[in-house]
Length: 260
Image (cartoon, rainbow, N blue to C red):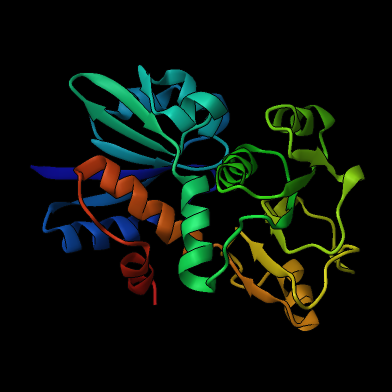
């Protein structure tokens, strides 16, 4: 079988997913190729049209993760709980969806920073699909608490009401062990100061990788925090995604090496 892979979202022109897909195919000993699909939220129904006709398996990014979940015939447990997917697979004339963002994020923290989230105090900036996945994974890994700071109160409430240890930012614990920025770079306010409770012992992760060092991440680097952009998360969640597609045993470290 020659696998037809892709990544869909908007904007999509700078996505590195096709690079990871083709590296994964080579490592797994499979044939195929990958391409980018520019699809805006108002045209999300096109995802269903693509699957099976042009694409066998697809990565899904902003702003399509919730819409993609609604198009699926079958969802994995995480996607069903969160109502978002980042992975689609066409199999047996049915559309299957999975969510690997959160587990991939935790894998990357362990694999690249040696950081275990158990019993830690975390702040997550943003309350969209990526934040939902990351928060759920943190809870699964027995985090002590997560404070969520988002611009839309309804989105924050949708996350906090799922778990007793997830709170809104008004109950922020200090000091902060881990801070994660999930907000789109283009919609951010200018970063001028780090949040109270963040110090040089805090780990700071910005899940974007374009630019490689955002203004927000640079502030935390200057403070002396251990820090990372989203490349490791991208690679580690992609490893989980491809293993789901193919039944393979790829690792995030292998795929991250393909981006070096």
